[in-house]
Amino acid sequence: MAVDIPAEVVQQEQVGPGLYRLSLYAPQITRSAVPGQFVYIRCTDNLDPLLRRPISIHGVNRGRGELFLLYQVVGKGTALLAGKRKGERLGVMGPLGRGFTLPAPGQRVVLVGGGIGVAPLVFLGQELVQRNNQVCLLVGARSAHQLPVGKEGYTAPFELAVATDDGSCGHHGPVTDLLEKILAGEGADMVYACGPRGMLRQTASLLARYDVPGEFSLEERMGCGVGACLSCVCKTAGKGGEPLQYRRVCVEGPVFPAEQLVWD
Amino acid sequence: MIKPNLAVDVAGIRMKNPVTTASGTFGFGSEYAPFVDLNRLGAIVVKGTTLLPRRGNPPPRIVETPAGILNAIGLQNPGVDHFIEVALPYLRQFDLPVIVNIAGDTVEDYAALAARLDGVPGVAGLEVNISCPNVKKGGLAFGADPDSAAAVVRAVKGATRLPVVVKLSPNVTSIVRLAEAVVEAGADALSMINTLLGMAIDIRRRRPALANVMGGLSGPAIRPVAVRAVWQVYQALKVPIVGMGGIVTAEDALEFIMAGATAVAVGTANFINPRATTDIIEGIERFLVEEGVSDIQELIGAAHMS
Image (cartoon, rainbow over all chains, first blue to last red; front, side, top):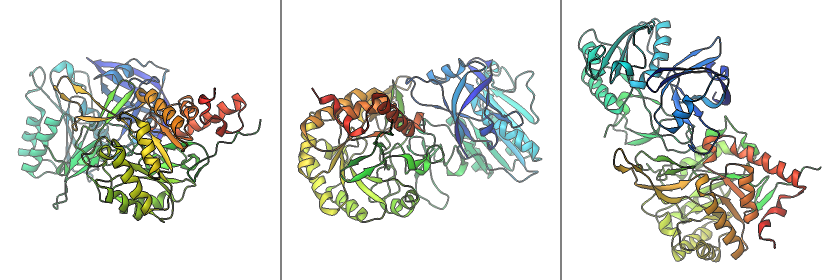
């Protein structure tokens, strides 16, 4: 059940240019949060910027009641968020939205994260490893210093490969090249992706070509966060000739089956 | 001091306090139920309903502006039958007058909606949306012209026994003229204001920020415009007014009441604080106690007293 609580900042740490890792004390949220869900944060008590900011859950420590967020400063709201220090309190609603559907134990899973889109996939990877899934995380970024995770010293309990647009770290090219190599080689039972629209679109076409199911976590400008205002919609269609529809990213998503999404 | 009276009556719709929700910002109520006790609201005005389901506009549908938001949803909704069969039974479990916002492409659509909702258990009243700026047909096409607006209201009144609240647009030369025309046509109450037509441009993409190009501006940025509209209409007409436009706090709500609103609706503020409505109810009650006012009625239009 989602709640709206004042959550205290436990730690705020800059991990790259404009990249921050925030830890909040929010046991009411960590208790029920699942990978793919998000929180809706009030970054200021003032009226400009007016709206909350949706940020996906990067991880939880249920024992300590800590919620981890990994985010990038992209505008006024996230800049204010980056200014919050230990001990300050933020209005946090969550956990919101529908998370990822988990695969059967033992299945081989590939996670594809573009830029800050990797944030929810780390939470998912941690849960999947505990369920004895074979997990491989692919991370793409413009260049080495903009990698949100996967740089030197970063450890994860799963296989990890990196791609950069400028070749400064890992594969030189889009992260979807790495996915294609896997799909053409050893294959995968399920693919989860989050990132820029172009990356998701390319991932969708690879999944269709290799006939692998997938789920994507989407981002859209949001109003209420609870399904009331119909602002944050994405275009979907059903497999059986179901008509085009706009679905709410905040409650029917943010995670959607890849084959449901319409790219135009 | 004794608890002050907060109850008001809007054209026969009895509200335990003057605070309701603005259509389109509170869904069908269930969306906010985890965060706010719906039994505490004076009334709920649900998302705009049409005869048939509507797909709505393509995204992006929302953009933030200083102390406000522009939206162009385009009346996406599951249609009136779905509302009656699914949303309304849920709302009936609460002690809460339900006001149904109706929108159509034609005068006949409005009349058919009013007839469909007449006598349906759990519906306390209708809000006639002749002021949506985000649809091609209907909406503002009716709300900007006094004769068309009056024709819609006459058709609705002829099709229902429910109290009829007419929602007015600020995007007109004289809101008083519109108000006079719809009251003359039989409107039992007025709600104002709907959003202000606006626009923003994404300078990186060199394109309008909204896929619909233009949208409706709401939020604190529009509050003074809304207070002025309530003031002018209250001065010109003796009709209950539901005031709205950028209300975030109890103080904001009290401005509308003193300008002449019998009730107020909270819209965009729900997005930033899901308990905005109940916080405002508590704040109004506190204000009455502090000011030694025993009944909210004393404050309706109080700013007009010389």
